[in-house]
Length: 248
Image 1 (cartoon, rainbow, N blue to C red):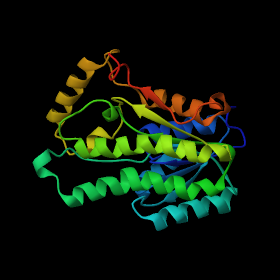
Image 2 (image 1 turned 120 degrees about the vertical axis):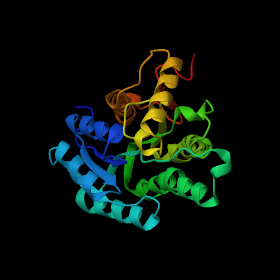
Image 3 (image 1 turned 135 degrees about the vertical axis):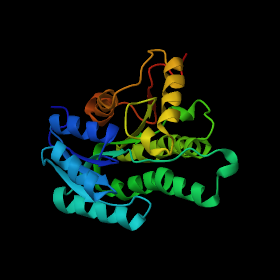
Image 4 (image 1 turned 90 degrees about the vertical axis):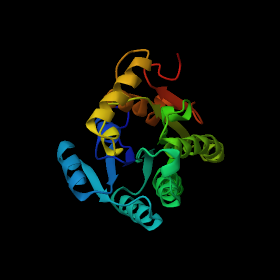
């Protein structure tokens, strides 16, 4: 059990990559805290996890919510060993349709939420701890309509390097996972019609070396590597899990 007696704090843990990671972490012995913004999805995730996770409702756009979630974790467990800053969302917008409010909302969740999750959890992270950030294949390729999402993910990739350097003297590792096209609810929340989603899926699949979408469980295994002592000499890096989408 690679995470026995460790406490894992997971944002965006109610579905997709976050939920599958929570399942695997629990199987590997971790005490898991799930943070999500929707009460119903939190309850559903809790049922899938067999009641073995602490569920905390919080809007990561609000620093005070993050602080409350961290304090609830401290009260319940006293410390944190693994932070998986996985929460993120966006919608497709062409250049001419982007507004200041749209930019602010994207950065509030995808960048600010990630940054302040790290800032507020660090005081509870013990030496040898691990911080994992979800970035995106959009760091490496351009897709129309996703300029702001890509910018937020590029910014979080930069955070992994800078905060990795800053936290190294404390014995805390910081790494990223860059998912490619993964079969999660994320795409269904981007404001596309079923026909448009099908077209996007077909176009992406054609570009993927392995000719298929990835599964959340495949990302969870990478998160486990970065969370565990198996990656004790790995920091500042980005593990690309995209079936070859950005490599070939």
